Length: 297
Image (cartoon, rainbow, N blue to C red; front, top):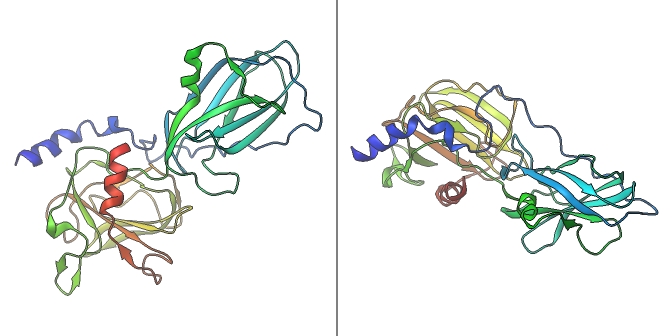
């Protein structure tokens, strides 16, 4: 009873959990990542200093509603400055570079990173930062104040935990592989109060959205840039998303319920390996993945 009371109390603060950054089904999809541009054939720059710098959000997700965005201005003793803006991992390695030519002092410049490496692959989970370098220089531009360094950093993750609010993982009967009448349990149950928001653990394309006697209201999402399909079952109401629609990581997809063959309010969550959900793929145990996402979301 104490656990149930905790779950119910948590429902009122679900919106504050803030997974993924989008809390309304009608939210406008993020703009595309910035074009990389091309380096100058004869780069020039003065003595460049970063005057202002802001990175938002400080935590973001691959294919999420808000890509990591750096907005900055420079100070320089020259009116034209050819710059290279890098995305760096924790080891200082460059994952992606953007080129901006003829940047003037005190003019705002913005870069939006879509979370992909120079090879077009999703970046790993981790702590990242932007750097601003005059083209052809070996070191980043100096910062106006030491505190500016923190504004260049951000965290980036590939997946979001799918429940916004208090929850607990089901006991043995709710685990992957548990016995059922005529079959085994193909997912992981996560107990949570009815009405808590559910969000996409990974954005992509809605493969199916509908109702089935055992699953109740459910939705299946083909995860963009991954080899997985994700299935969410027992939603209280039909998902606002329709088959074929695009969905972003962290985007609301419905609310926790107990429709179909459900014992109490919970999310039944499945992960399917390639080639996908009932397309020749097979379900896998999602518990360790959920626990990992839960730690940082």
